Image (cartoon, rainbow, N blue to C red):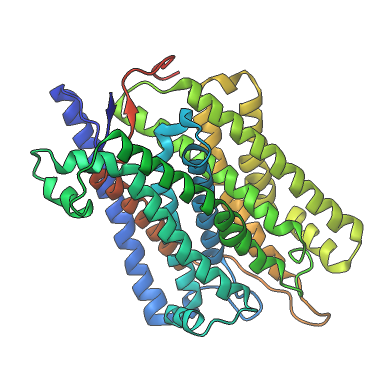
Amino acid sequence: MVKTGSYLLPQTPEKHRLQRLERIWWVSLAIVFVVGMVSLVKGYFLEGMVSTNLTNVVPWGEWVAFYIYFIGMSAGSFLLSTLIYGFGMHQYERIGRSALLSAIVSMITAITFIFLDIGRPDHVFNSIFYWNVTSTMAWEIHFYILYILLLVTELYFSMRPDLVKLSQSDKASARWYRWITFGYVDLSALAEKRDRTVLQVLGMLGIPLAVFGVHGGTGSIFAVLKARPFQNTGVFPIIFILSALVSGTALSIAIYVIKNRVFQRPDDVPMVRSLGSLLILFLFVELGLEWYEILIGWYSLKTDEMATLHLLMTGPYWWTFWGFQLGLAMFIPLALLSLPTRKSVRWILVASIATILGVVGVRFNMVVPMQIIPVMPGLPEGQYFPTLSEWITSFGLIAMCLILYTLGEKLLPIDQYNDDIDGGVKHV
């Protein structure tokens, strides 16, 4: 039997434990979010960009890094859901809706971050109404709109049978579900088949949109920067796509396993191990592409590319390269997913969390160090490290992301859990 919505156990002590954890979760998120919004108003809205360490030499900083970080999370989560709804890999079905919700929430968060960096988000409408077809950013804005509409539509059709059931229940929330189902009541096998067909079509249409439009397109924004030779390569957008698959897969594993830990229910161990195998495959491919990116830059012997590599590996940002990009995002998860620990759900979770944290460093290294080296001899070298205001505002927006996801889980039938999990072992 598949259960949707909040997973409630009949034992009163368990209900109390879950209620206590939920209160702690909401209070913690609310505090971080409110502090972040206060910092946003005090620093960004009242003081302007002077509250950041951004300059005309280094105009992109932490907010752009988080923008591409969440874009990657969104595209990766969506592509993982496409394996289920587009290619019929139903062994991953329990994470399908969660992956789509993650994709939507991550996209909203990414857009919020880039709106802060733009400073005048209302100017986005100029790109919509006066479309410059030679502008990569203008194309991206249109792709983002189509992508969000596709994500919402696909999530709706994946939930529709359960939404109809909830709308016909005697719960107080039935009216809410009747409202979002628009009076639809068909639960026949034919209706379910039609919904599956729609999901498959949407999933297949979304693949080129996510790969070439959303994340590959975001990578193209950086790759077309002629003045930044280390970014101005054809491999840069491809690395973006592989990095998206890595972070999206890791996020889906983490959400699934952590929810099971909170609700004290067994894991679908074969599914988690299979997702772990996908993650290690994506990690190996990404590591290979990054190796070629560095090797080609090294062999070029160009002054600016050599200076960028030197800055990454031995300069003030060495810790983001060795500690986050190679350590947390690559070598630690690769080791955990290659050694005997690959069979343990607990260690697969650790590898996923390490990847999620490490990719932050990957995104930072894609944005900041590339701008430090002067584009012309005689120009000053850039310097940048986020201010306290930037950090606090960023944490507030990350809290917003978690709040939106939690609300989605509470209000919609996102959670898909099967009591009869073959091979499921608690806390493996």
